[in-house]
Image 1 (cartoon, helix red, strand yellow):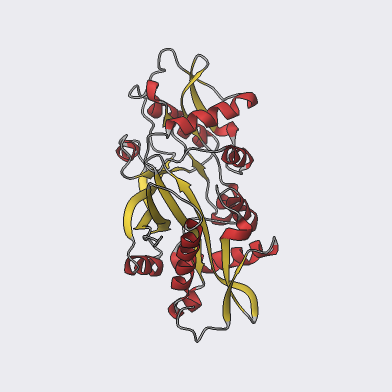
Image 2 (tube, rainbow, N blue to C red; image 1 turned 30 degrees about the vertical axis):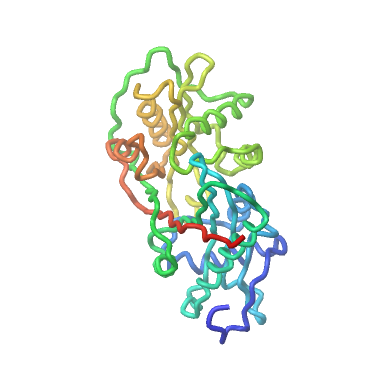
Length: 333
């Protein structure tokens, strides 16, 4: 462990439900210092961890703990996935270190724990494509960014969180001939999710969804079909905005935000103004529900020009997230 005056600390694996409370407490201690955009209750954090694909929480979530204190002083989780460009992405996430001990090198200790876990995993698997270490981090997490750059990571991509006042005027759009917007029936929910997956197939970072992810999505607190806007061409899905309201965030921050997320148009129907039509209808719905702002996230380099489109629609950037990558090291055979 780094700089070990700190042999009072050790790293252990997830042991059970009681760990969620300690992890949530650690998250809250980091939230103000790092100006984290995300809001969590204990239950929302638990749900988020349970919905990560290819992630065995008992074997792939680690905590930094003191021998004299049951609270956690650090955490990191690890998982892997393949993307559409045949990259194997070794991701680490929930990388948190109590601000009071950051000067002691514990962020590096956890980073090395994640990298070494991936290296040990790789020795038992074979993959012929490119392999990368990767993490997504908020631009305000300065100490972790400094460590990543010192450790050979570079920024590979940026995503931007954006918001828009619902009081802004909405453009007038005509109903598109042959299309109708309607909410799906319960027996059509899975069809919508499959269409959403298909629409994102050609975008950066896409990884095909597995059955486990569909089930997790359907059980997520963000799965709120009552706020969906779906465009249909007879019985075929042309596009969608899968809106939701994060009640926990609104309660904690005393806000009234509606999320206009998962904005997607399938390839045969693109360049016809469907995204604009759906987004306007979604914003109008949230305005009528009393929401003060609508919120979304976008890949700043999205090849469809989504970022510029959202600017035109009145959205403004609020938070930046950085994807840091480093090539996976060659392992001697």
